[in-house]
Length: 192
Ligand code: MN
Image 1 (tube, rainbow, N blue to C red):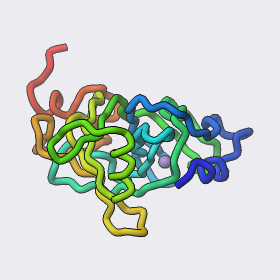
Image 2: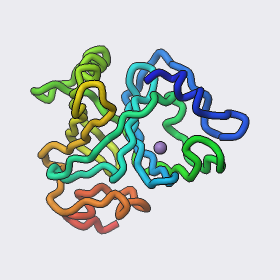
Image 3: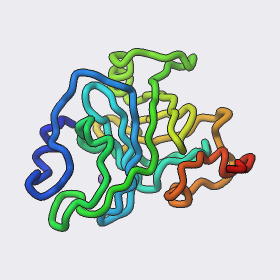
């Protein structure tokens, strides 16, 4: 969904969110914003193709491969949205509070876990299945985004089994005020 949709939905004299524009470089960053709007959800955003490709994840991401988190694709956001946090005033689209739950870098990968180009990643996204390797404070390792049906906005965000995956129940809310990864929390305690 184009960035024009993003601009159309917002009144920039009221919200402190950045105005939408497409940029021509990509730093392979990602962000997860905890958005306490009419319904609490987590916005998962990948810096790709000059915008932030965005999904609203009602339950938040999970580091447990047994979880298949519904991720509803929403309009592309401008790359400058990556640092956005604060309050969107009442009466505006997405009114509520936004905080940064996790951020970091990612790269798109193929079936053999080899890094692929941005162009290849965009093609795979269009096909409805994109594998990524995340390096955030909380989210780490391989994930996949899979579109459930053609012509629908519903995707699944699923952790792959790897050295970063956890087996315990994963609740994003539990990690709200920490930069600790799930592995550190659930695995070996860190002394610091
Ligand atoms: Mn949102």
